[in-house]
Length: 187
Image (tube, rainbow, N blue to C red):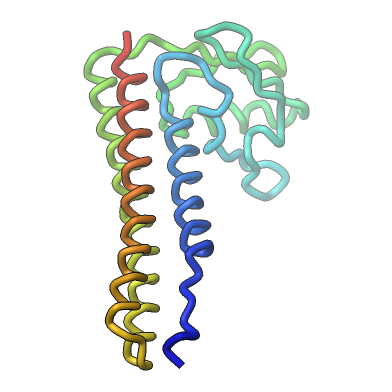
C-alpha cells in the first residue's frame, strides 16, 4: 500500500509556475522610467457595463521611449479610459488628442525609485508565500501518506524532492527581484 504513493510533482511545479507568471505580470506593471505597453495591463475600464482590460477598448502603442499612446476605438469611451488611467495609481497624467490618449512617462526621482523597489520586494514576497503554500500542500500529502503506512525513508525522499523544487523557485524569484530592482534604480 505504501509503495503506491506517487506525489504529483508536476502539479506542484505547475502551481509554482503560476505564482512565477503572476510575479512577472506584476513586475511588468511597475514603471522603470521607460515606456512599456505592459504597464497598462492592470488598468480596467468601465466599458459597456463591465470592467474591461484597456487593451480591449483601444490599441496600446509605444511610439517613443518615454511615451505610451492608447488609440480608443469608441469615441464614447475616451473619457472613461482617461479616468481609468488617472485612477490607476500609475502616476501618469493622460493628455487627450481626439481619440488618442497620450501618456508621457516622466523621469523617476530617487524617492519614487526607492518606493518602487519596495513595491517590487512586496510582489516578490507574495510570490514566495504562494510557493511556500504549494510546498505545504505537498508536505501535507506526504504526511497523509506516512499516516497511511509510508516508510520513513520514502517520506524523507519525497520531502527532499518537494524542498528541492521549492528552493529552485525561491531562487528564481530572488533573481527576478534583483533584476527588476536594478532596472528601477538605473538612471
